[in-house]
Image 1 (spheres, rainbow, N blue to C red):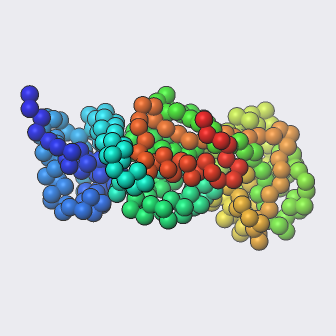
Image 2: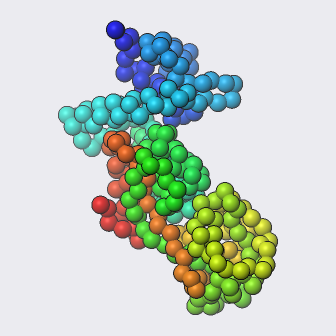
Image 3: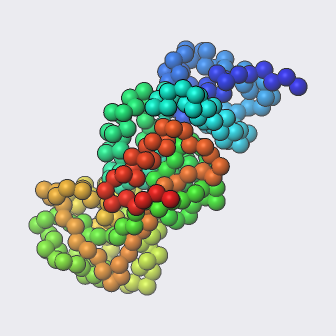
Amino acid sequence: MSINFDLNDLQAFRAVVEQGSFRRAAETIRITQSALSRRIEKLESALGVKLLERTTRKVSLTNVGRAFLPQVERLLDDLDLALLSVGDGGSLRTGTLTIACVPSAAYYFMPHAIRAFHAQYPKVRLNLYDASANEVSAAVASGEADFGLSFTGNLAPEIEFSVLLEERYVIACRHDHPLAKAQSVTWAQAYEHDYITLNKASGNRLVLDRALAGMQISKDSVCEARHVTTLLGLIEAGLGIAAVPSIALPMAPHPILASVALVEPQVSRTMGLLRRRGRTLTPAALEMIRLIRELPGVLPGD
């Protein structure tokens, strides 16, 4: 049987998946939207299957498309590596690098790494997908993201996890809060004050619920939010204190926020890199990972 499609059609398919729309994909690979649609139709016709579901609002993968995507990515990534090995080893392909990460990692890791990466490789377009831990894991597992930054938890079986750092939970409060001058505070003491917490959609909430399962808390939270970064804004506004992972707080001294160690018990989480098993990372992804591993406090690579 003759398969009547080429690499351009595969690149068009990957661009649509990466960008989530035909318009943005066409802009990325610098062709018209109608030409992009023809490439996708040609690929689907040659394979005899439907790869994408298209509505007026979004584009999503069919079950067949989801299974086909890893094969396409592996083929194109291997081609990138082969071309680099015979060409200019310092160059990277023009395209998109998609990194999925929990918001605290986006806040702590990525600004420094992205600044260094963009200065060195301005041709690569970066897509930072900040989402919940479950969404990060799903994006890496499906191939929508090249790699992810998240913490250990309910990871999909096709995900490989490598440790970047171990971090403790601390109390975040304003400098004018009664706890701000303490060397440490117990969880019981912290919950005597007005506090804000994460809702059950947060992966951090799962970590804390497991660690504090036996603790009796008589006082309800003032407010719940989904993301740690939202908690920090509420704390700055004076609504209370919150238990947050240490990397969620600014690295430099902050004019409003203070950090206090939490004890009895000490609760920590492990932050790391998420990769899909069997996927060959592009040179762009490998370079970004190298830059992340060079950040202060990050553990050496495997």
